[in-house]
Length: 184
Image (cartoon, rainbow, N blue to C red; front, side):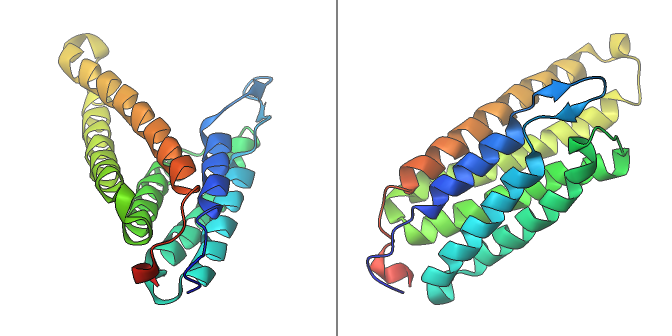
């Protein structure tokens, strides 16, 4: 690795994720004017680019690039206004794997961001798990029968949104750094 390799591609990952999380629908159900597949593709290409610069420590980045590429394909039907529940379940799983892999890469490449990246990757995994279990449970009952579970799902969803924003901020702040020479 070039000991002066910048981590600027993480800014492209952040912009890609902004495209993924932002929705601007036209019509009903409508086409999303902010294309999630393009955001995922941006993230995939940026991770691939960075993986090429950091040599043998790039496993997490290669995984992130692969997952983002798969997510780009999975996001196509929703972007075009089509709903396929089995596919809709896959994208959040891909987002968790992507977040975990990118945070793992940040921990190796930018030691000063290690603690934050570690908290985000584990918190994202935990919050997504809570949302999944609670949401599956809530859908088995009438909302009036499960006010506590409904509150848990809502709270976890808000926490998940906060984590995504925190992740994007981490990506932008990491993008201004130079990779640690020990990382390559």
